[in-house]
Amino acid sequence: MKRPLLAAATVTLIAGGLLLAAACGGSGKELSEVSVDASCDDFANPNIGPAITKEVELDLDNLLVASLCSNATTGFTWELESISGQGVLAHVDNKFVPPEQTEVVGAPGKEVWVFKALGKGTSAISMEYGQPWEGGAKDTWSIVFNATVK
Image (cartoon, rainbow, N blue to C red; front, side, top):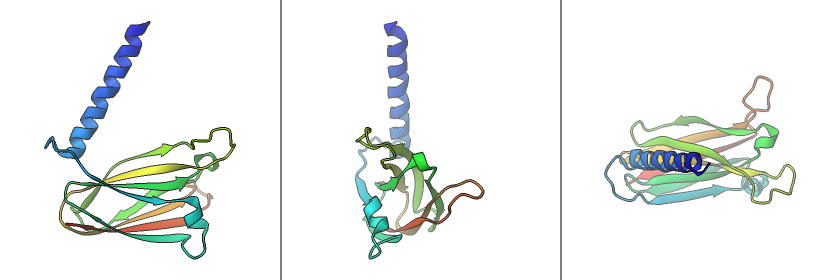
């Protein structure tokens, strides 16, 4: 019984290592992260949202990690609309992180999006929050990251 669990853990560790190596470009050097958060309160605040623009500065080969409010139980999700500045930033990964307070029904979690700085220059990442199916709510919230890679 312990062997299948050990095998699954080993596969998970290897896959994680491969993803990290791919993100590092095989250089073996540790990546730095620039974290940007946008909470549900930010988007609901008429002085800030529902369309948010954030300025971000990061070094070459570093990661931009964006944590965005999201409620998968309602069918809403973030979609990457565009990344301008070819060769400056690339989408590496995204995942949904459930809420910490699981006893609250319908509580929002967050989507974490990761981008890698590939080249020096400027880039704009444009994302929209909505229900992706036909007839679903569109353009409920939006965010743009204006990034400068040094």
